Image (cartoon, rainbow, N blue to C red):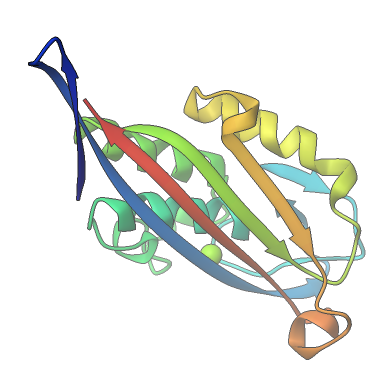
Length: 174
Ligand code: MG
């Protein structure tokens, strides 16, 4: 826990508390599935396999938020054994996770995330992902960083067998 005390003419006027979190998620890729990344449907020959819509980026962001407040992980809150979450839109999971953050009195400061996949090229979709996530979490576009990298054809990612996302977030409490 990081606390920053703000003084004004020698008086403490308020304290800001910060918490950081990190999340990572993996999903297999397979033909016949839709590819959802950052809340956006991406046209591609393969999609991510999962109990929900298998949006790795939103799942990594959810885990980062939960981690920042020591609230467990996405599997604890939305178990993949629960039929209620079958095929669920991960934007719903992100909103519900952020509601937990807000209930604890915290606000999102920023997200920095990275998608790891060989194909397709993600850059054209990043602005829509940013605006989707920023709108869901009521932050500015420049509070939501989404980067993407291939693995230069190395590993399961390079063979287009899977997709990975990582996310780091900062929360603040006044
Ligand atoms: Mg997942």
